[in-house]
Amino acid sequence: MSGHSKWHNIQKKKGAADAKRSSTFTKLAKGISVAARQGGGDPNFNFALRVAIDAAKGANMPKDNIDKAIKRGTGEGGEAIIEEVIYEGFAPGGLAILIKCLTDNRNRTVADLKYLASKNGGSIGGVGSVMWMFDKKGVVTFLNPSVVTNRDEFDLAVIDAGAEDIKDNDGILQIICAVEDLKKVTEAVEAMDLKPDGAAIEYLAKDPVAVDDSVKEQLDQFLEILDEYDDVDSLYTNQA
Image (cartoon, rainbow, N blue to C red):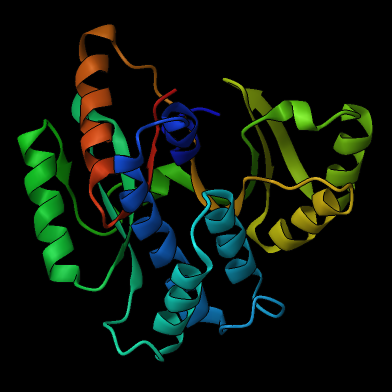
């Protein structure tokens, strides 16, 4: 898939030191809280929450942490509410970027992002500045495509469920679909006894842009710095 994706970062960081685990758990817990807040605390009736819990379990997040995150989302935890906010801006080289954050303090988050972006060759823009360059899609992700042993059967099943495209790039298999078909496509995958690493709404560039080698190193550093900020959940660019 073109552009920056959290899945490439997850794949790259596999096997990293446990020092990274705390930050990962923090982000996963926020995702669980947001899902619980938006759709309730029962994963049997809240698809987004079920997916968020599955992702946390896949990262070996303790059950107590998961339960605490659900309670925070439903207002039982007595802590500040976590909400999802998407900021728009520009990365080095003039690339468009969407920064999806999960935060309990919008003022703190936007101030921090403006500082980090400006210090590293980018900027935060206004609402609508770059969103028009992206399509909002459902994306089902496999970090290890080899788990799909019968590709013909797999492709037919997900296309029948609503898949618009199937991409296999850089060792990551992704099914692209309309947002409203995400649950159906995910269930079609699970009916084949396959467990995706993610099933979420993502933002895909309409017209990916090639990056000049002279700015690639600066761009990679910029994205890594933003990704390490605890309030950032996902980054999307129009990088080809």
